[in-house]
Length: 212
Ligand code: SAH
Ligand code: MG
Image (cartoon, rainbow, N blue to C red; front, top):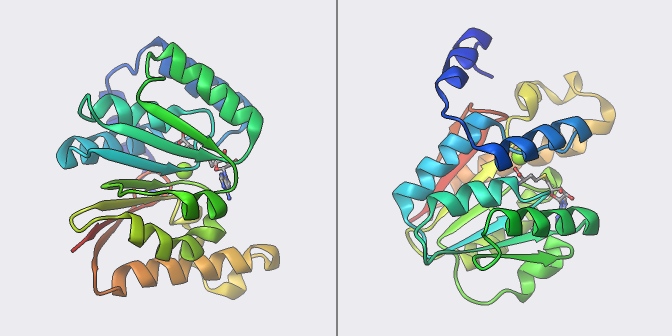
């Protein structure tokens, strides 16, 4: 989203993520698994470090990259609960957590988030939404129940490579439903009384919301 030269420069400033995260980044890239971008990772870590959450919830584990990234920045006693519906990915994520020495702090729940979210009990003061974009709007009411006052909801991929700004007629027919839903999601985040939201064009677009 940012001008390419600015992005290259900012990436050149990023410290080394270490051998394990680099290997996960490379392997995910080779297989087209959409893990967060480096700059999104830096933003997420900074938000977690500021918030100092007691319990993080992630929707969309993939191979555990962002979960490890958040757990590293969180206080030692913070737990991470992350949901993934695709079994091979959840298994690979479990291996990656073990290799990162994070198995004790990160819990992977395997299954469809629509069902699992309904079964969760307790509150999560930091929620990272990074799964099926067409479902964000449907899941939002449940996430609001799981989020305490002062809690933070971070939503990834909200600008969809820029297509979210196009009119629905400029978008391919097959992408129109998701396009309309994402626009409605962003509108809702900005207009719900109980939320304070900033939408930032970092990575693929990130919405940062705080519950009043
Ligand atoms: N957060 C990860 C990337 C997640 S990619 C990272 O940055 O490292 C999105 C993941 O969400 C995919 O692995 C996909 O299988 C999963 N997903 C999509 N729809 C889902 C659903 N309804 N329930 C649970 N997981 C879902
Ligand atoms: Mg994402």
